[in-house]
Length: 130
Image (tube, rainbow, N blue to C red):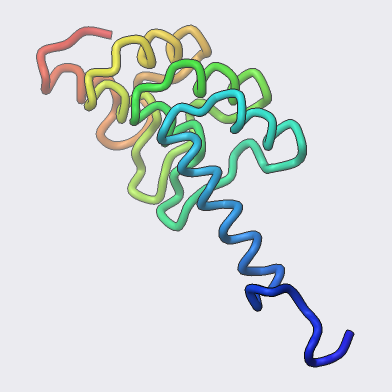
């Protein structure tokens, strides 16, 4: 390769990977289940985390996408993985009032006592039950 060669945008492979990661986080947040799972099936790490330690599953859960949560869990995502602030996907779903996600996570074995605050404590704070 010469100095003049490379792609038209001038991006390095590192920039491409960062852009792909951001796209994965957006797909999880927006609930694009099929596209996200196709990328995971093609090799994107199922427990990929953002700069704050939020996994794809955490982002899907927080934004109310039970199908994203179930699909990622079926591919081995850790339903109890805490982000850098010690928050669990279940506590995030409880906080946001995402009842379908809460049910899905509990069925998948999420621990209501994991993290800080725990999902159980969060539910109590908002007068909800798990």
